[in-house]
Length: 499
Image (cartoon, rainbow, N blue to C red; front, top):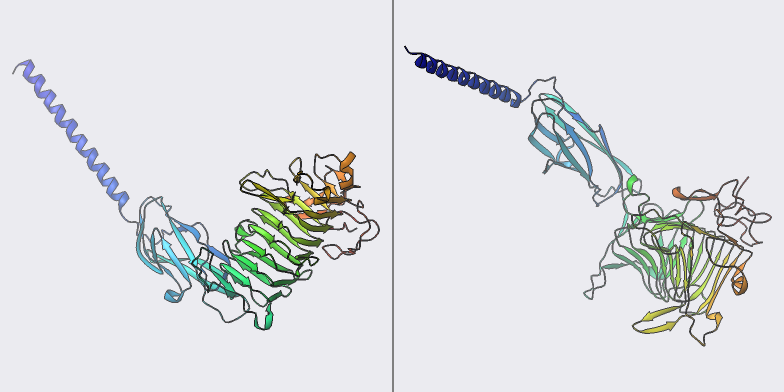
């Protein structure tokens, strides 16, 4: 046999040997892969969860909740089969599940790959409870895996409500609305259970709606409480039992989120409206107050009230007549108080503050005064008869928080734009001297008022708030927003610093 033939046989033999080992490697990998993909059925292998319990805050009856999410984890290298995921209360459960895109109250044969996870989405809808008191609703999501039983607890608080939903559906583009039942010209909302408004709830002509102390009013997205011409709103809260207006979501994440509802609208011709000890928060416009119709009768008397976290404004006056004291207006996306189209306004011992922290940067001053409007190419004068601030704080994080928007057209006299700040602390770059001195009586400028915590909506005065303590003028508003007495020289703003 030649050397060349021996060499060729050697080469051929080595190729077969290499091919044999290659096949062995493939088989080993295939076996390993098959073994890895084999379902893990050991009863000691369990699932893990991102939480052991899911809590829903108060859920109003007949309305669905927000969606809560938790995750299922397979911490093992092999896949597992969850033979069944179900609600312990079965088909009668108020909760609903969606697991990896599959909805139902009982879901079977859900595979979860090794080292992977699945999302579980949970909602709850509570049927009317037949009681004024909140009730605790409990259930659990149960998982059966390899003869193991595991669960995640579900808890919700159900609350019956007075539901004000549309029963009028106009075709002229006006939103759906309901008319508040006002037998004998009087309607009373009580505090036994919350009131929930969908769409527009209308206080109609010749109707007076009274809200007793502790009444809770919740409004759906863009919903409005509308006091129509010749209608009246009386909000009769007390200290510690305020009337509250807010959105319908009560989860912690929503408690200070603006823009959840529309506005309270006191339209032109509504009269003798009173709001005392109310908390109005998290809407678009807190109070939208239109033109007074009957001279000498205030559109609104607003006292001892907090309005905050509005995307547009806390108070939007449009030629209105407003008398206010002991109020806090704060943290809005545009203006805190926009007093437009002229009007007649008086604010005493009020705190106006704007430290807006929303997604859009605020560029508007917190206070705007205006005495005209423009329609097409025409300008129309609306006299600002009086805009008076006494013992107030007007402060924010812009360099100038006072906007004066007046027409200088002759022959209109200065009385058509009449405003005065009397013993106030102001954030402004405007001059207090010369001709302007008539508008600023014993005022202080650009000094930190010393709020306790403006980011936490606490506008009490710190003990060292020397720029606001004892800086006021004698007043007949003898109690502050906390019902503390004002004695001697009063402090500025809605709160008197107590010892």
